[in-house]
Every structure is written in structure tokens, then in C-alpha cells.
Length: 59
Image: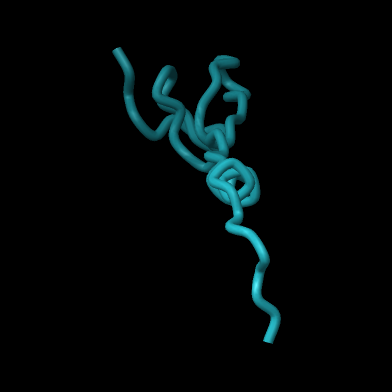
């Protein structure tokens, strides 16, 4: 059975694990009605439109 000759350092361990710890930014899309940035597949919080239909009335 293979046994390591030396202890693996903390920096090497953290560098190896860092690829899995990255946090991805949430996806963004542009509202075709008002041009505001919004989350995809959600009602636009600015104008209240979703799929070319007004779903929420905004004042």
C-alpha cells in the first residue's frame, strides 16, 4: 500500500479544493419590455411583465 513520505501542506490542500468552493453568480437576463436586468423565468420587478403579458400591475 502506498504511503506518503511527507505531510501535504495546508496551502496545497486548499488550492486543490478551491475549484469546488467557487460561488457562481446568478444568471441574468434583460426584460424585453423595459430593458431592466432581471432573473430569467421571473416576472420583471420593474414593469410587472412576463412573456409579453402584464402579470403584476405596477403603479
